[in-house]
Image 1 (cartoon, rainbow over the protein chains, first blue to last red):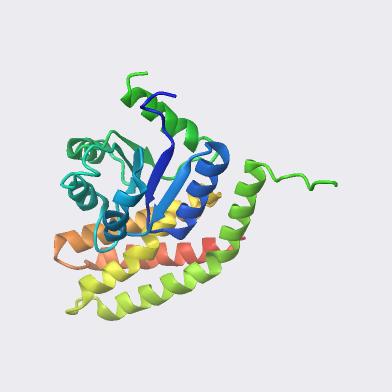
Image 2: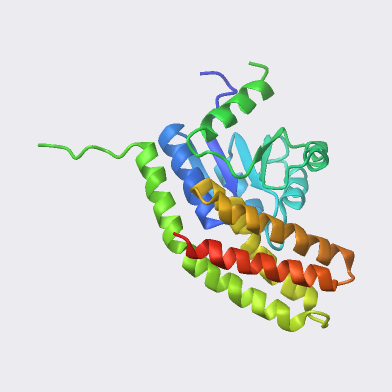
Length: 131
Length: 116
């Protein structure tokens, strides 16, 4: 298995409905280990323990939004190099450009189809790794 | 020993959709309360806080409802979110026209949520 295998995914999302459906599809369909955090602060506190390969990050969250959380990850030795995919309903062209400028590798638009979410993530992962 | 067949991913997603559908009433209670609070604060000192209070559940509905098969709710919630963001960011509060639009969207959301 290559060093770039996708095994552990860290989901930062405040909506319990979305948490549940993403967890279902990533575990059941993708077989990934998944850790869920409901806020940016919780994510900052626990990412070092989980050591994910990939972060799925909601954009709009109360208190600490996705972009602020991403900037904070980039200052942490354990998290600064972990690729981030934003998940958002706000995905107009200029908004996506902003997220990419911040360092996200891609954006998954809400709503998403739970059945194809894994494929979407794996395609982004493969592209990121030059596969 | 006989094993029960495991539900497929599609079955599980369908169950989540059914559960979401049954939770729409509770979500509307939260949205109605936040909307009533905002109506009471229009033009007042706490208007921005009240806008954020409504925007939180509306944003969730806009993002999650279509994923669970309620694109109709997501579309209306999305329009409400855009309007609320624009009013909050303008710092000028609501114009009469925006108040009317918000009220119409809220009524549309109530009616659409009532359709199961």
